Length: 226
Image (tube, rainbow, N blue to C red; front, side):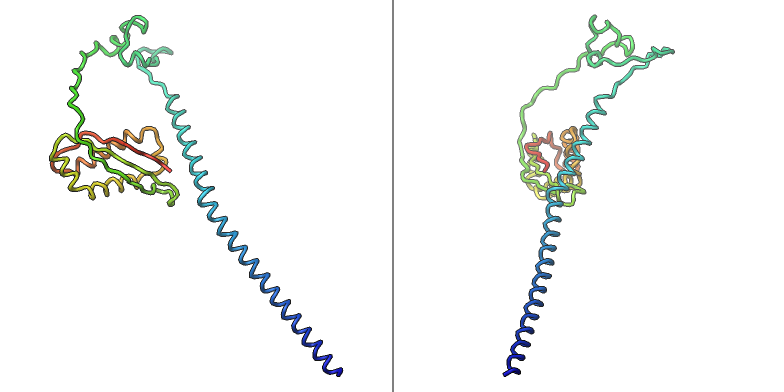
């Protein structure tokens, strides 16, 4: 009888040890699981929330510094005189041609010579055919896939042969546009002068590609940086 009780106690002790071991294993597994989940969540939050905000803040600071620097610049005309009055700032309105008495009389005429006659205005020949290039969405350069730009363009053409060539070679032209925007960083696209500058560059690339003639203009119908 005593032996049976002793065996029973030993068995109960062994069962308790096994239960404790299993409990410890589950505890360790739980700790490892939560550590992995926490690491993954931290990585996702950093990549999707923190880094884009930091990148956006840098772009805004860069743009502000460029705006402040651009506004602070002042141009001067060398008068050829010696001493502290050898140069004076250019008045914007005078530089644009306002040489009336309230702007100093004929000061600019004395410095630069007489004004040239007015150039003849170009005659408006009407809007040409518009060919739309829609839904260009690409990741910007050096953004690790965190920034992208959505673009839609309109190409103006008066020559029917050029228009037909653009339609026939649409995949090749879209590929050229995609490669162009993919090569630009988010900071470059966010610049104030990007739209006008890029239109000139795209026109040059497109005209170099075409064989039947040249396009007249390129317009943005959508330009969204995310």
